[in-house]
Image (cartoon, rainbow, N blue to C red; front, side, top):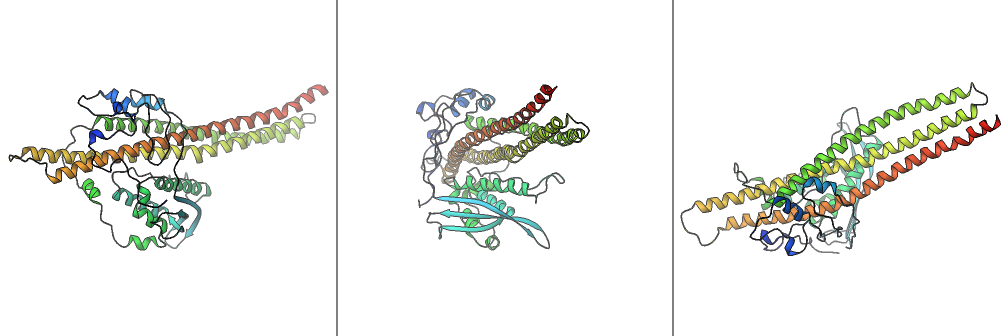
Length: 436
């Protein structure tokens, strides 16, 4: 599939009143607007309404009930299947991490393989190597050139010294998965995937040479967002965006609590694992002193060893699969808050211009062009932000569905292995009892 980026709701001269909230129902009755102003609770219920819209490049989320607050929304998280009915024309894979030892530094690079049928790519397939700072450069460029859109977060660069070895196989593999997901989220976006910096990142043999060409000029939108009127305080954030802000605050708080508790559980499991590894061999050494009990004691020792192995696997799964998703979405909420803040800045600039026009004595039949342009930027921001919020909600449903189902499966497997281990020694104990 070739061509330019798919149109988002921001394209076209629609007024803010006519723009539907991405999480609201598709009927006109559910749209926020009209002469009357709904209450905050009613607006929250409408914003996250009974019927989700079809995503621009995704599936159709199943319907959810309408909670009256951000807290109840979290409590009613729906785990829906996503149906991807589109033909994809861009595939990106991050793999094959390699360690590079230089005089001044040691770092890891990753191979990025790209396959595409888009006309923007001169070749059908590319293979380049990139390090973490290159991914960071890409994200910075996307933020500059696409300020109205939610840019996926990168995994955190720094780790606590003495806790994680950033060159260990486990850490490198966890980072590789996160970087792969980062690029796939950009690839699936109908606007970000067509960004020129993303194209360069995927295809340029020497990315450093491209970086040295100089700092690219920001887009007009980016400049407007970066150099907004200083000192002007936003009157009021529209209720639908205030509801999104409240939701993000609650969401990040809940995930932060889960993350802290999960880390404590993992720490306790590791301590328990250390005790099990010392506990099992005791039965084995004891069996050397016993005649009739030797075989059952060896069985108990082997059983504890199997339980230790199962617990180690469960702990690894929690560390490598569960925690990274939580941290990614905590960072995701921060990214969304950043875009929301930029939207507020554009609104503040628009309000400041309107006040300046109102203070002028001369009677102007038409709104000045700069005010209209500012209004267009604000409406563009509103539409893009709501569309990306919808996409983010859809991805969140899929990711947490997969995460929680995986966690349930891993725990079931763990307890099944422990049950099988303990059941295996029962016949040995019964034989000794019958022999008496």
